[in-house]
Image 1 (cartoon, rainbow, N blue to C red):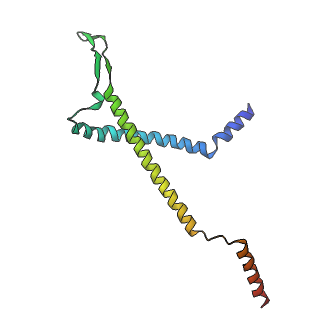
Image 2 (image 1 turned 90 degrees about the horizontal axis):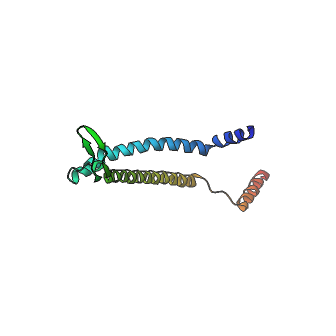
Image 3 (image 1 turned 60 degrees about the vertical axis):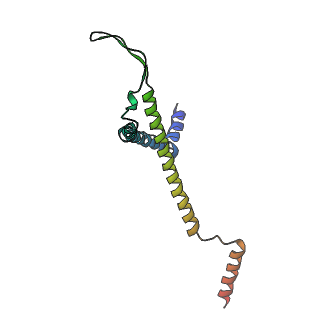
Length: 142
């Protein structure tokens, strides 16, 4: 049992696992932000463009609810396709946001690599090193 705990500790403390945990937490928060963007900003504008329709309330009633006064005898049976449209918009905007974020990160990392290549002096060949040693030895003899 102690060996399993040691292996688990080694696994859990690796950088990749911690990075993944941070990514999941940040991703969850990012998902909430994007969902709010879609639900509170984008969808009302889209609804306004298509005549004031609230997509989440769109549904096809298969069987209406049966009531007896204020008491519901049987609930309504419906296909809530408007909610599906809303979730699809959420997904598309989240996917687009993640794509743009990854694209920006890749551009920054590519730029850093190009700067590192530009700033690093070229490594001299073995022949150049040998010639430099010979030059230094000749300077010392003078």
